[in-house]
Amino acid sequence: MAKNYDYLIVGAGLFGAVFAHEAALRGKKVKVIEKRNHIAGNIYTKEVDGIQVHQYGAHIFHTSDKDIWNYVNQFAEFNRYTNSPVANYKGHMYNLPFNMNTFSELWGVRTPDEARAKIQEQKDAVKLSGEPKNLEEQAISLIGTDVYEKLIKGYTEKQWGQEATDLPAFIIRRLPVRYTFDNNYFNDTYQGIPIGGYTQIVEKMLDHPEIDVETGVDFFAHKDQYLKDYPKVIFTGMIDQYFDYQLGELEYRSLRFETEELDVDNYQGNAVINYTDAETPFTRIIEHKHFEFGKGDKGKSVITREYPADWKRGDEPYYPVNNSRNNSLYKQYAALAKQEGNVIFGGRLGQYRYYDMHQVIHAALVLVNSEI
Ligand code: FAD
Ligand code: UDP
Image 1 (cartoon, rainbow, N blue to C red):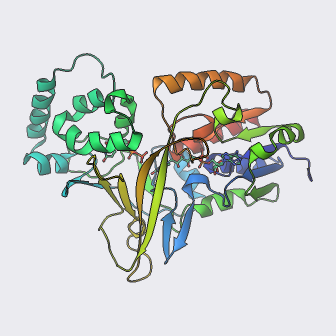
Image 2 (tube, rainbow, N blue to C red):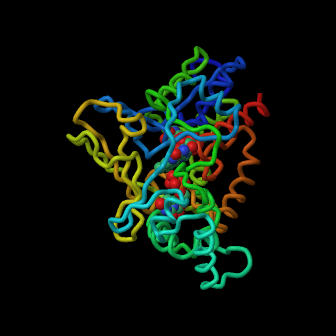
Image 3 (spheres, rainbow, N blue to C red):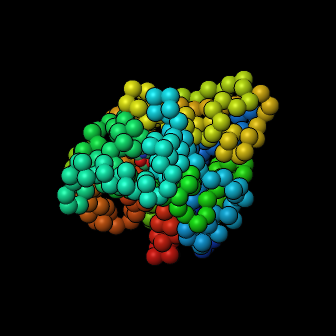
């Protein structure tokens, strides 16, 4: 160890970068290691044909927390992009999230009262009782059977590789249901895409004389040595892997991204189109230039198809699967983590939570304040 580091941070994703940045500002010496050959974790973007390509899926920043919004705006200027995905169900297009445009397209209704009546009629026909016990019941109780069958069931079951009746209800509560003609996917006060991409945010966070970064280095190649050499470790990889899966594997969902450079100006007319039927093997197509209002070289566009995939050891764990079995196993790992004195677990994988970016920043700032 060349310097007397105060912290080793495992993972140069958003959590690790915020922690490293804040620790350095507080006078700490920090080493960051990252197993991929680039920084920024899953928010990594790269320029292709003048377009910022979201290498690991569409990332839209949104928050209602003014402090978090101001915090992230230190590192980039954000545009006014508003996420408004469109669903393609067997060739028919519907606006998302579920709102008056969707209901009107589905049923020809014109007013909120007409839409509510239609949804109530469908809910009554199913006769649900008590609190929704799974994603299917939650979805039907929110928006009835038509929306569920056309826009949710197929997408959800391919995304998670499980029946909607086996999935937790909270996943579908991420999406708004609105009785206004408003296609904004998020209810948050602030939303946008960083002009020039996300990678610069992490680059700026890590650009400090007290921070050293090494990519292409896997913590597990020298775990014991790292634990000996560094007084404190912030670990943002998989918590079950850290403990050598000794209590069993947590479940993750993986993805395969298929990216294509096309010689067209405008392929699909929107940044995100979801394919909500069960048969199409991918869940969505992103056309990256639309995140920045058509920026990019003339006559060029870059698209990415997102294929959900089962996870096995060695694959990228994009999503934790927060059902009750996994959450209770995670609790047991968290108890082991508590005994691990000088190691703190953070981020989407370290805390096994379906965190969005603003929540990751918040969690990292809370940790810095309690730690230092
Ligand atoms: P990560 O970004 O996963 O960073 C962890 C890093 O640790 C990785 O770089 C990994 O390579 C490294 N690492 C792991 N193990 C080791 C090891 N053993 N040794 C060294 N390095 C290691 N959020 C939003 O707010 N809006 C969105 O629109 C949005 N869309 C998303 C779409 C997709 C497809 C996905 C997967 C996520 C999306 N998110 C979105 C969530 C967002 O990506 C996360 O909140 C955020 O990136 C998590 O940051 P993190 O640092 O916790 O994890
Ligand atoms: N979802 C759906 N149909 C859609 C979009 C989303 O059924 O067209 C469901 C699906 O179960 C998904 C969840 O809503 O996993 C959350 O969607 P979100 O867009 O937040 O997913 P993410 O961007 O995190 O993959």
